[in-house]
Length: 248
Ligand code: OAD
Ligand code: ZN
Image (cartoon, rainbow, N blue to C red; front, side):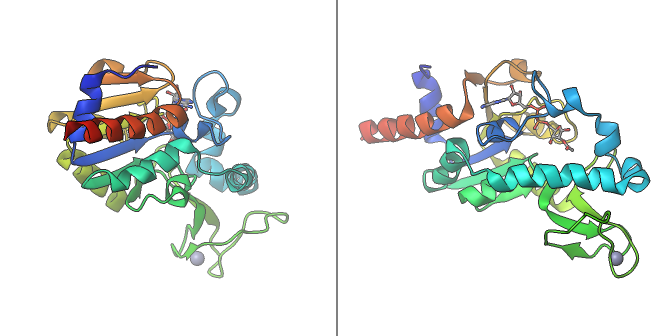
């Protein structure tokens, strides 16, 4: 795709940049998205797998599903999109990633400031004493149990649960303070995460969406760049460098 020169100018002149990301940025790493044609929620029911009551009813089933997802994540590598975002840390005064993904790929790609709104699949905690665990549990005999007798669960946000307050507050502050807010590979329909888009807009940031197709929020953004994030983001790096080189 050709990217408008005006857009490149705005990006190149930005100082504080936020990347708000969703499942689409990890699609090219082989991790399935939630919505759309091959989306997870087309085949599986979130109320059975991503819900606290369902977990307490059938912890083994929920654990098996998260184990399966963890295996996919462990086999995957950050793709050109994640790597481009990490590289952009050298190109702007401030780069913040606010992600809805639990796959840890931004951190593995080298991004330093990453706020995880929906948790991280690599972490677990006890529902009773809240102790955290960072290990791979054997679930062949059922869901893992804590010494205190409580069930251990993945540290991810399920439907109906609050987002981790520190992560949301930090993401919200970044959205308020940035001058450029990218919305990458998210359908923008899950709240409160998606509210950050409007927080950034109401505080004067330019919004640029990168997605393979128009989304719920496309009418609210300043520019939409359609294509795969793994192609567009590296292309942006090249265009920003060209723009800055030719300026002086
Ligand atoms: P969705 O599955 O809702 O949306 C993925 C978006 O990525 C869609 O808009 C796709 O068009 C786009 N997409 C797919 N491949 C792409 C690519 N290669 N490049 C760019 N865009 C691409 O995923 P999320 O918006 O992340 O919540 O979903 C939000 C939340 O809903 C998730 O965090 C999860 C889910 O239920 C929880 O688990 C709490
Ligand atoms: Zn415990």
